[in-house]
Amino acid sequence: MSDTVAMSNLMDRIYRRQRHLYDSTRKYCLLGRDRLIERLSPPLDGRVLEIGCGTARNLVAAAGTYPQAQLYGIDISAAMLETARAKVAREGLSPRVRLARADATRFDPALLFGVPGFSRVFLSYSLSMIPEWRTALGQALASVQPGGELHIVDFGGQEELPRWFRHGLRTWLAQFHVDPRDGLADGFAALEGRLGTLCTFERPYRGYAQYAVFRRA
Image (cartoon, rainbow, N blue to C red; front, side, top):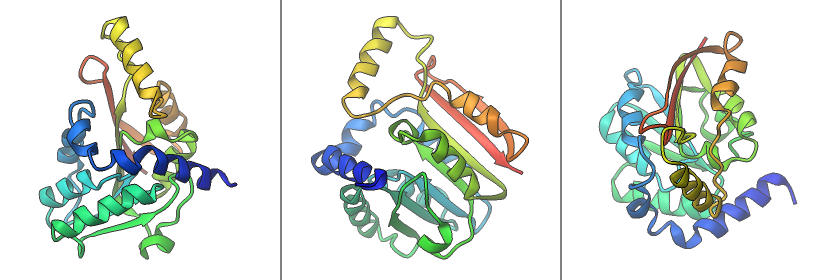
């Protein structure tokens, strides 16, 4: 069994039931998602891709914020995409939001959507669920067009929060195969110069989260 198939099966097992309650329960712990959307600011008629789009909650919000943008989403879980497609259809956004099943570490925008790349790409609390996250980071940047931006929000190091909170949070996250990427800043540093510039790196909510913007050269 390939790594892609194994990961897809794992995500389907985790979210087969959770997907129905995901949006109502995760809004209390996935901090900074709306702030990321507000700061995307794609160009008029720009293309925006979310990697690990889950239920399409973020794509629907982005569609409302940027009515002239074209939205795209990929996810490795067929179960999550089923929920995402239903949500997009209910909101009447099917003409503007296109979804596809794909592995974040290896996908081709031209084959999936017939486009060369995107003006904005974002990952919202999905990088911490991708075992080969450094490969996914490079793949995400490869899909950003020159002058475009990659935005990421995810769990941070919780360095300014009590030790008991950090331990409890990480123990709980591990149950869902979530591993905060403490090396994210170093991962970006390795890509700077060659691929672009790290414009923003913040640790909001006392380090609970981390938010980064990388501009493609």
